[in-house]
Length: 405
Image (cartoon, rainbow, N blue to C red; front, side, top):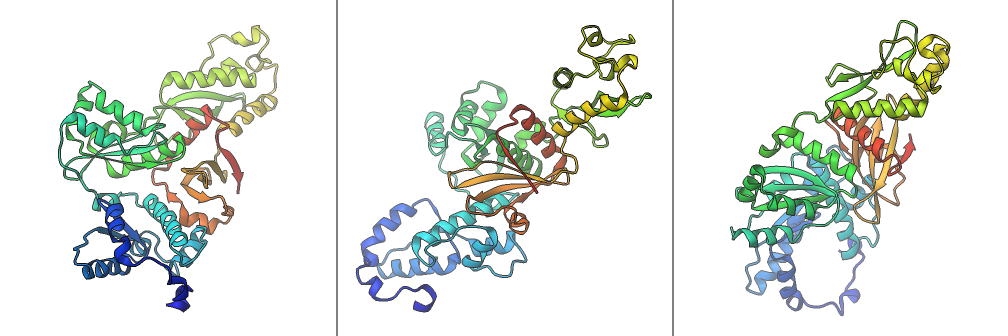
């Protein structure tokens, strides 16, 4: 044991005896799940020591070795030291309580993100006894954070009812329970447990919410199982070689520059880019049947509509807006705020698609793509995720740092 941990008898001379800390262990683990790397070993030690004191110690346990083998298959080793290295998790004070515990917490966060079907959460859900509505609301709200994330409503049988996202989880859940609408009243009646995941920022919450709704199909999210982006802007060429901007309804076959939640939003976007890039109204969906567009009359169009500006010069400006709003075939990482000060969030765009998202320690060299592959949660619904990222970046272009790969 000394060879394995470096802990000898001299170091343990002044350590407290187990009976001196037993009461505190019972208190801090009451109603909790014990998480450990090789949990069977740690839990068996706890049980043995409590048995010696004549106390029947019963707790649920969760083993990060077993979870890692299931959610991170084909790794060469599942020891805590090797796992943390392969996942870019900083590990200090190896084989000491604080160092190993912090590393296990970081590992568990990655595993929870990898668990797209939420089996970990469902298997260990503990529903408290029913109480009056007012006291139930206080009970449900008490543990919730006032930060960005995703939340989950469960009924008394542990069945998932609803998934939502918010910049303030506490405030949004409270709104669900004070809303007089019929759907809210149903959720108020049925919900017996609220769980949450912090995401660090709103875009990560949007991506996670979309992933969970599409994968888990909660009963009261039916309206959101379909795409929320109904229209898109399409780039094509007219018979004179000028690139045009049109609007089409969203479908799986059309290749859009970017997409929107309504026809009006798409039109507003075109109005803005026409002004920003000095485009011809008649080369967009906003144009009229007249030969010269309105903007040509007020000298903000250089005459593409009447053939005075060459298609090559005009198309260069259209290409500028394409490069700004489309990341087709691009490879880069969006880096944003993490769930805590010691980490950042990342969204991996690979070959123009949202490939995955996750979190990394500030100490990690994230250009190492082999580590990135292990720590991200792969995206299944690429098209929806791309809509979400493009829409968010249009509204908030400066909230994420872009790292080219």
